Image (tube, rainbow, N blue to C red; front, side, top):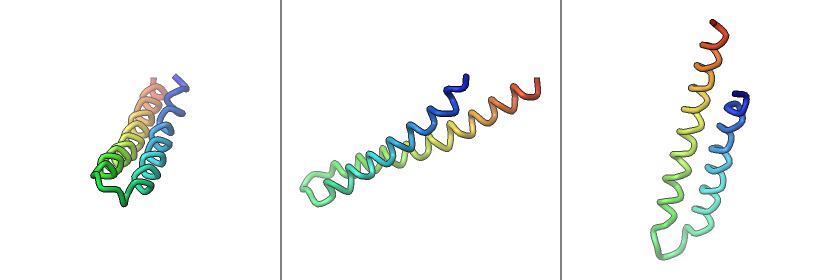
Length: 64
């Protein structure tokens, strides 16, 4: 289960990508940049959620 340590960083990469994409299309007519910003915020939330979950999982395995 060591891959759980690294998969949480995929969310940070996604957040950076979607933030960059939102800034890139900020001045266009459509409101697509709000969608990209929403996904970026969700990705940051998921990073912290997965990090906390992985820490709980590791602590539980260390107690056993």
